[in-house]
Image (cartoon, rainbow, N blue to C red; front, side, top):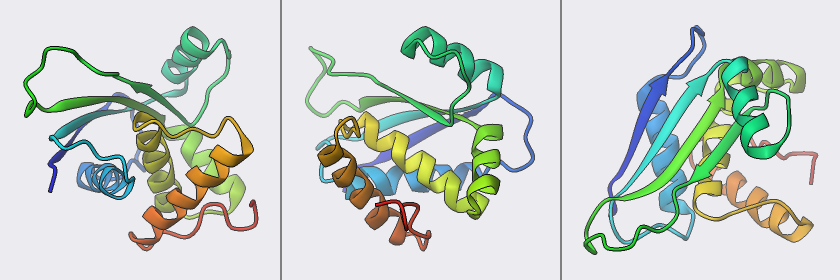
Length: 160
């Protein structure tokens, strides 16, 4: 089995951020069940931020001047590394206050919504996207399966 390391960085004060171990588990499960897990060990950086930081990143990298729930920055392939070297998948940046507000607005358990956002961001690092209806359906079905394996309620129930 491939080792997955999630380097969790908390850059905001929020009392409802899940434990680092939980975040690491969600990243690991997403990689393992994605069908796209590399054959070498992987590392993902997960940075939990406030609305100012996520809004700045969203503006700089997506030309959207608003706070969002999660952003993913895939690392891409790195030439010249030994075949057995740990592969950097990239960074997942998640905004604690946006995730909390969305969970409340959508009537979802906060922990379930965190799990969904971490899995969603990790799948983006592995090349999944939702820019077409077909890709969105594929990604949502995969998210639902991964989250169900962690006893997380289907985040897409009623939205498919």
